[in-house]
Length: 144
Ligand code: CA2
Figure 1: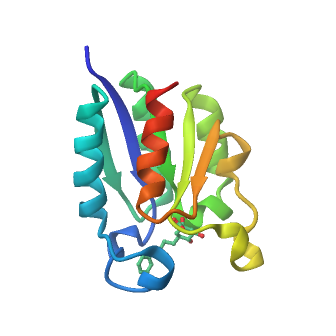
Figure 2: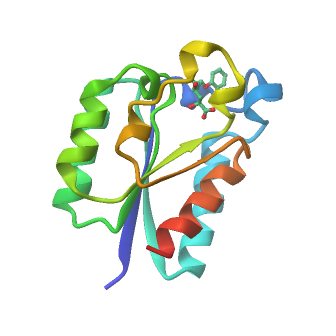
C-alpha cells in the first residue's frame, strides 16, 4: 500500500508568493504542493498537504497523521515553530518522524527566530533553500 507523508504548514504560509519574495521566494504554496505531489509519485509515496493559521489545528493534524499511519510528517510550523510547547508535546506524543522545514534560515534572522520548539523533537531539519527545502525534506522522509 502507498505510504503517505503529511506536509503541514502553519500561519501566514497561505500568503506565500504574494509578499516578501526576497525572504520566502516567489512560489506559492499551491506551486509547492503541485511539485511535491509529482515528486512523491516518483518516490512511490503520497502526500497529504495542508495549511492552517491555527495552532490547535496543527496539533490535531499531528494526531491525525499518527492515526492514519503516516510514514512521516514534514512540518513548517512558521511562527509557531518559535513559540509552541503544544507542538513540541504533540511531536513527542505521536512517535512519528517529523522533519522540520523552513523556506528561510531562521538562524540568520532575528534572534526571536533562533529558538525552535519543533526542532527539540524533530528527527531532522531542512531550511534556507526556499521551496526546495520541501523537496529535500521529502527525499529525506522517503529514505526513513
Ligand atoms: O522560513 C520559514 O519557512 C518560516 O517558517 C516562515 C515563517 C517564519 O515565522 C519562520 O520564522 C520561518 C513565516 C511565514 C509567513 O509567510 C509569509 C509568506 C508571504 C508573505 C508573508 C508571510
